[in-house]
Image 1 (tube, one colour):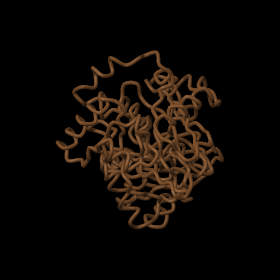
Image 2: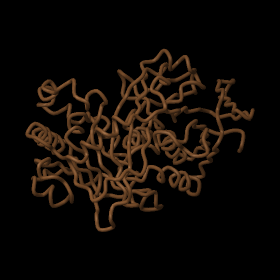
Image 3: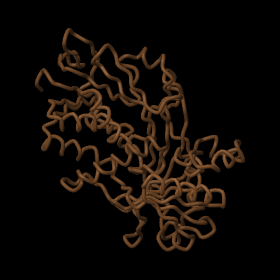
Image 4: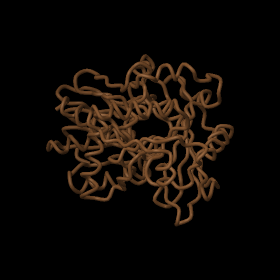
Length: 384
């Protein structure tokens, strides 16, 4: 590693990486420091669904910027992007109403979507149960990625084409303003300098500026997911599959006229409410299908209370609900895991400056894979 850079990014996940991408495009010397051998937190522990359709107007715009960048990079270098669209499946008339209202909103903001009839859903998505689906809303521009592959290929692309430097297994233990520079000290005692430092630490709140996080409104969310064995080669489930519980949860639908009245009629004692469950499906390139997910919450200062266990009660409930929606050829579960991400209780992202040139950017919540690129573009243009 050199000793001095224009920008040092602490954290090699998707949010930090896209900040590094846009900084490098400006011709800046950029170093990304990643504490693990490879990114292993929220960036790789998700579905790999890039779905601006599920976000409110502000973040949909960021997400649409992200879609454009994903496709531009994929045209030059394979980072696992597949343009196979997203669909929301309504299970009753209330959810169908929300889909129709969101479709109308999309028509107004120029984001392409198509209403699907029940029969069109049954034709497009093999195995979907006729007893579940009433209709759908399809977004053809949206993409999926392989979350455990994409970030590594993106790092490779940025190294070879943009000259971004990446240092792995490099834990930053101290960061301070020193005259005209910011000094970053690693656990090995290396001292690096930069004009600006950007800290994209995910839910790692204990090392750098812990008091800042303790005094914030940040909370940590734990999500459980599972993955089936590979389905038969003849079975293909294209794109991101989002269902009725997603329609009732995602921010985009909160902008629909009927949303508040529909939410008010929900059973607040149900298991899906208790565990924050909404059922998603996404087929990986190896033929397996990822199913989830759940949501448990803790304040940033109490994140250890979430524990390291996987609650079998939650997985059993999600699997039961999934079987009501799709009759997959194989439901044997190959893998289970949990992911953790940070978010603000009263803000859509945590962005705080320490002094003048140390910038903490985290707390993007579940919007990371979709919104990071668009947000990073705007933020880098602000910082430089």
